[in-house]
Image (cartoon, rainbow over all chains, first blue to last red; front, side, top):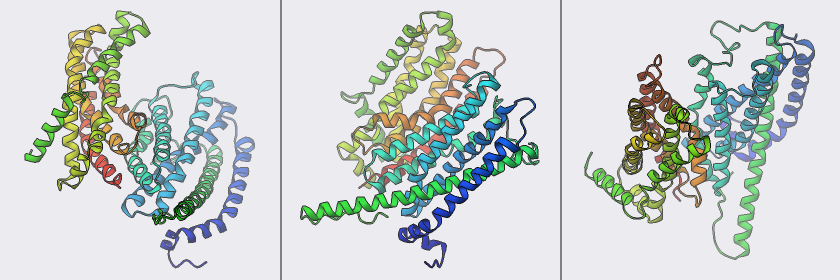
Length: 257
Length: 223
């Protein structure tokens, strides 16, 4: 398979070819990174002098939260691609990313809650960061609900893309909620203008886990996109078959993916 | 406002207040929500006074949501939405006019009814003034944000519940600033104007984002 430019990937068949070639390797690298990251999390990283062993929850919680926001950003970029260029792969990308993002958000909420009980003394507090993250979770579910309610894939994709763009307002709110309000949740300690304030022995396992989570997202997203393309092809084949059997000249929605 | 938009505004308001328009249903629903809550939490007047602004705000939010699914649905059913889309006027402005008319028919009655309902939750006159002012500034934001959901779900047969799911998360900032401004009117150290101006800012932003997104959704929903 020869790719002349990145735009050749716009062709779903070429995209499928690339995904099929890349996916096993990507899955393998993801697994290896996770093994390394989890080993560092549980055996290399020291326990915190105040938090004890519960500090290890951070290595799951923080990457999951980053990826939850990154997934929404990917969906936003894809939505622009979907609305501006009517790109079929962008539609597929938005649809495939939503459940993954919802899962990362839920993971961040659950691990945060497990950490909050021993540290703050409550499973949940109505703090700006927690609340805006819960809103992100609800928005993911709302996008999935909207997607599943509209039958025709093209129209569903445009509706979801519009709602995704509107919902992007929430992402800066999540990011800066710890700066704008006095929150119980601690402010950023890795991505700061004056460099990370977290100790290197804690930072390295966190970064490895962040890479592992990013690779996991990439693997799952590509696999979900491949499945969605195949699902649409089956739908198109069924429509063609149905219209063929009844003998009508109804044109199926053949252009999708 | 030029001729066609005035005509559209008047048409919307007339349709809303006539039989079947359901404009006053929202006020009735508002009354019932505010009546039901004291049954749930008990008739403690001090407690009701403390959470009264929040009760009124949530009641107004739910009442606004209830009326929203008619914003474009009725026009789609009788085909006038197609005429509006083909009419040659910018669809964004058409949506703005429709939202303003919808707010005048459903949101404004809620604001007018608020002083009476405030008595049920034992509010002081200054609190009543604060709640009315915040609702007057905040309910247009609810309508404009809700227009996005109404436009997205207009093609669905049973879009009402989905509309609430889609719209409610986006209305949380309005609720937060509205209630905190209403509460700040009586609690001494908190300034009233800070959250109130934020509320006004959210309203103005939603006046821009809402119609643009709703118009895009209406266009994309066409066959």
